[in-house]
Length: 204
Image (cartoon, rainbow, N blue to C red; front, side):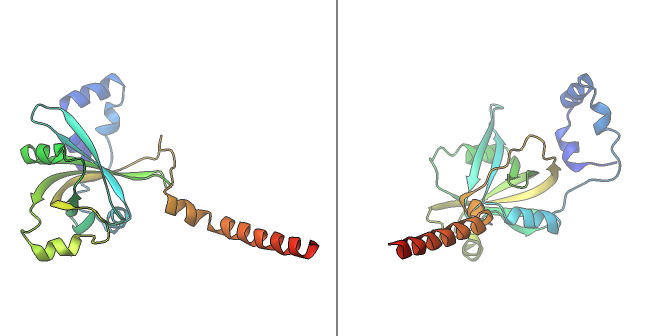
């Protein structure tokens, strides 16, 4: 049986760690094929709803690095069932991820939905593209309202993905998510305040 993400993640050292913890059979006797090397409608919808993700890379000296990437919802785009892309905007100008990926194109993305306690893990290979390499393509994926300076484009070719269980994910809410969830309460408060103001006017 195949399990694309774990086929990549499970190395001999990982096998030994699993055996030490009595978990090796969990990942050798699973049922069914889980190549997970093509995005379905479910993954595409989840990805396009995100406004941030975490991206890992590895340096030439073997040190891992994890960087946060953020933007307006949908800035990470699904081009097809095996390809993602995003415009990389100027940050603190350390360029650690950019340098790491130039030397080793392997990357791993974590996409989080904190309110739903859901996460999607993606193994991919990253390719850096110049903004002027394909102006029409650049224009089609650039968010002109974002207000940051675009410096490059990354195109990510999927190797495998996996969904994680919700254990240990504490729900968190963005301002827009909180306002949407509490809209009926805010409307009720506004109505009560208006009624109180009317009652005070009558009592004067």
